Length: 403
Image (cartoon, rainbow, N blue to C red; front, side, top):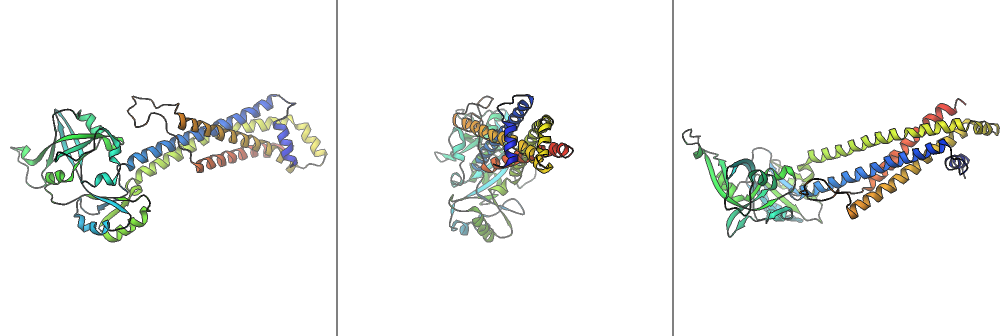
């Protein structure tokens, strides 16, 4: 066995010694273990929420979205919809027309975004799985109906069992405003809600989904769209198909994959994760200062052993290694213990969900989600070992050399 490692192990776990130094070493191990466990648990919970929010967003946003670079609307055939449908791996293409409108329900009013979609829309995303009340229907007995976001429904106090319809007011694209009769400047349409969806607050408080023909009539359009939303077969890679669509559509159109549609959101989520990691690492660094105290006191306590080792021929380098190994053992044992405890806690939370989310229970899940990522575990372990090396190196260099 390596001699410095053997001596360091004896100093750390000697059965004959139960003094304050051993207690401080034990506290150092527990401090490193607690910090490591906190990193594992917190990052795993963050990963769980990250994956949950992404899955919710993915149930509304398409795999690929085509929009026009200049202007707001375009004709589907201008983007090559016929050629796109022939691409292998394309499951469905939905025509979408969006526009803001004033919505009135009884005495309440709200500005919402009308999302006009065709019958293929349900094949493009998983919106039908996000219905919290009613059903996802665009037509009921051949009469157009609407699916309302949960936030819009809450503000307007919309009920599916009520007899009153939603009243949509859309400003006319052509014609001048008549001050004597302002209502003549709006197109008006009555529609009944068929369901309420709940995805995420940004979507729930913004959208009302209804047949694209209704929105076209309100805007006096014939076949124009604001976007083409595309579903790709899950067995196909999105990027090559996206490149093919770019070549078909040309330079006049934006062809965005799911990440590009929410690029800011993904960047913020990634930045928040790294911010949390660095904050917890700072806390772990503070906890690791116990290693400095432990090694400093151990060096003082083992002064006679150091003199004996020097008399036996040991140089500063060998003595320095003994106490470096002591600090590394504290970090390795503490980090390993922390990783094991953190993984066990995450497994229990994932399996049995003992820690519940607070509130009224209206969220899509009841307990904190966890998702352990192996790269995160490796990064945590590497960070703890590096901190342990630095905190062990400082007292050894400052004290041993001067003995």
